[in-house]
Length: 385
Ligand SMILES: Cc1cc2nc3c(=O)[nH]c(=O)nc-3n(C[C@H](O)[C@H](O)[C@H](O)COP(=O)(O)OP(=O)(O)OC[C@H]3O[C@@H](n4cnc5c(N)ncnc54)[C@H](O)[C@@H]3O)c2cc1C
Image 1: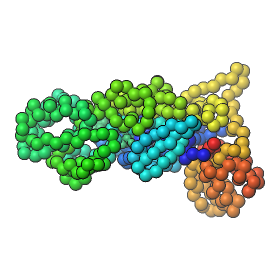
Image 2 (image 1 turned 90 degrees about the horizontal axis):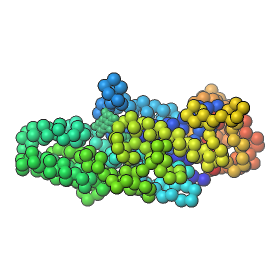
Image 3 (image 1 turned 120 degrees about the horizontal axis):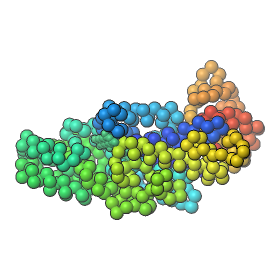
Image 4 (image 1 turned 30 degrees about the horizontal axis):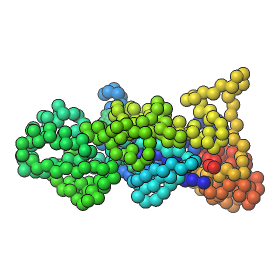
């Protein structure tokens, strides 16, 4: 028993893409997996702060648009999103335990999509009193020259990793004492957000200033978000994954957390790959065979069609509903199917909670296999182990 087949940590473009791809399978008879997202900030990650370009101006999205699109599927498929900060991920013999600031969750697979840094509520301040070094030093030189004069006597708070001293030196060369400088060293979990006009909230207390500069260069040079799990990392803390986003058995990583290049297109591409790969991993673990995820991984048996049967409904499988039905006109209405609203079906749906085995349910309600298959086919129910 566990909380979800797959837990995805981070709700930026990589995590949201992974979640949808792991949950949304369309092949006839193929089972969906249960997926849960855990993220410390509202969905969006860095791609929700401003207009973003997928490739160039020809393929770009206004602020909020990428996330609105990605969240549509997450909502349509009722994928739960927990707003919690992940502190540690522990790999056991056959399960992962994800420890957060609010609780503990278990799963068969984990996708790490935590980006180069934790985001909080920065997007509320971005472009006003908070900005980033994203456009690089050439742009920053002009910007700092103007800023140090217009904001003379005010306080700039730098937020970044140990590497931020390089940016501070660069700033001070231009500043020459006109603005006061404070720095907040981000150790991965010590920053709690931003408030008022403008204060960086940290575990050690509030750090007020007049402007905040997020030093992206320093996060690009070293990160902490991967520290919550023991895994292969490069010398800068980015998680090493192969081209199928595999880190180790059951563990996958996607997006900025796997290192350069830091881009939306890479995050979505790797998220998609990690979602499909984690789905296949979990499927093999649960049913002992390859999932025919048509057209992503075609399977051809010599001389026979790739028709696929629902795995045998073994006694010890635990059915879990993935969607809450709507009750209307004596029916339980799901996304793609409906069943009669009567006492038996109502009890059946209650017991499809990932806790009761098929044997428990059959013992109490008799033959329920056809209904289980109907819900499986509609992708509204999975079998956990
Ligand atoms: C201002 C700006 C403009 C950009 N413009 C472009 C552009 O035009 N084109 C382009 O290709 N790229 C652009 N990028 C980069 C792009 O946005 C990122 O590469 C992309 O968002 C990375 O996606 P991700 O999902 O890997 O990480 P993120 O978007 O960083 O998302 C990671 C998520 O994981 C969460 N998280 C981290 N640690 C934890 C934890 N311990 N517990 C729970 N949750 C956690 C974070 O809070 C965050 O929500 C831009 C970035 C910024 C900041």
